[in-house]
Image (cartoon, rainbow, N blue to C red):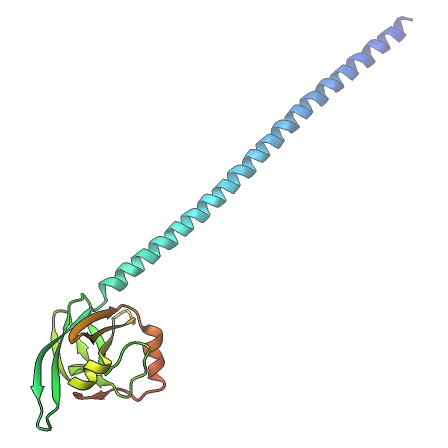
Length: 200
């Protein structure tokens, strides 16, 4: 009888120990699951932070690129400084082009018209380039200039084509700056002969 009771007690103790072990195992598994979930969230946050940092770095590169581009950009201003009567009775306008930008104007040429209009002729401005704070002069036929306008196109060191135009409104010349006319200006190169050097 005592042996049966002992066996019963031993079984009860073993069952209790098993239950306690199971409880501790469940608690440990729960804590491990919670830790894994926290680790997953931390990893996701790290990935998100890394992506945000990469995007911020990309934006900083874009800003730096824009600043470099702007620092190399020429800005030409145009002014009619003289009207000259020709022997045949026509008039020519002497135009002064000054580079007020920080970068040199390269491959500088002019045409009658405005951006988007294909010219029938193009002419290099003197030397084909205008360094910063330097002025160049060229002549245009007054009638065509007043009727169609005059556009000077130039490259920057960064390769961006810009333009400065004069058109006449109510008899007065109006200056317009065209910061980026890349697509249109580059499309001309395949369809029009290289600019001829010379005036008007």
